[in-house]
Amino acid sequence: MFAAMREDDAEKLNIQQPLEILRTSARRLMDRQMPVRLEELYAHIKGAVADSVETVSGYVGRSLQFARENFPEALDAEAHKAAQAAIEEVQSELQDALCQVKETFFAATSFQECEARLPNLALFESRLEGSLLRLEQAMALVDDPEHFGSPSFVPVPTISDALEALGESLEQIHRHMSDGSKEPLRLALEQVRRAQIGLSAALASDSPDPGASMP
Image (cartoon, rainbow, N blue to C red; front, side, top):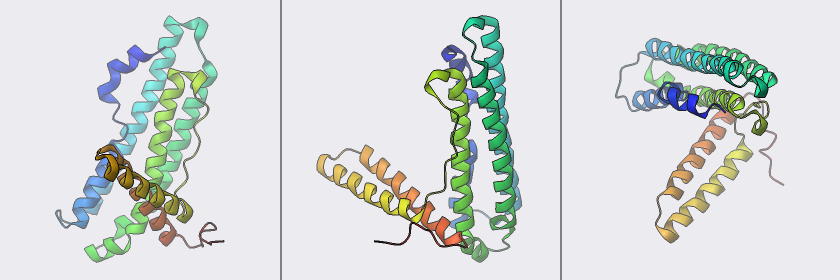
């Protein structure tokens, strides 16, 4: 229904920008290619998060107005309510995640402390990735309500998830070796990264992972 509207706004909807900033900056920081300016980096990420939430909230509002003016007979008010509720929940979750990571990783005063607190950063990265996915789902919800339910929370990968992801990455590598295509390598890297997040989150957790025990 709103495909044309989305095409007009496509350049503005860079919802994943906070994640890109986090990953790029963290990689440069750990490689010691940039000075330790954690306060500036935190402020940059916090601002990008606010921009993403504002962008999606504005998009949902405009789509509701567009539907009322052009397709009143097909308006699904419940879909818009669900999308707005999801945005508010994500905003609250992100504020909590930002507060926690500010008090842990971004409170470091040296490269050594940064390295020691990497599990906290990995946990924040996973929460941020899940929240941004929910924002994208909220946008999709108002575009085509009949194909989307209320966005659900995306949990942090566990040790069991990490083990499964490593197995999937090996399968993708075998695919690459058999046919030489590059796409399996990209998929393998995604799975390796998911495994890394799961292991880092387990290291940062105070309680044992219930999925860690083997039969």
